[in-house]
Image (tube, rainbow, N blue to C red):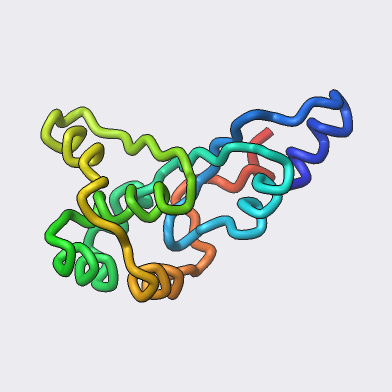
Length: 131
């Protein structure tokens, strides 16, 4: 948040969108609250944890229960939290699958299970380490 606060303090402008690494290991709860308070749209970067989450047993169980892929579960998880999510893919079938998340809704139990995965683990660099 210090980066956003600096932008606002130095320019008087509030960003419309902030793209951040966001997936179940790193849900960015505090930052999401800041965004909501200031009307900033959150866009998820690396919503699939760079593919590292596709074999996560909690997520595969949820996916199996809904008859969808883990990628669809992760896209839906973001959508249900009003997060813009644009997973990267060059495979037409995966792109179509990533868009097909309106046919199911994650339950409160699903959301609680996903929340249990929070570890703070990043798949990219920390914004404070990038100059």
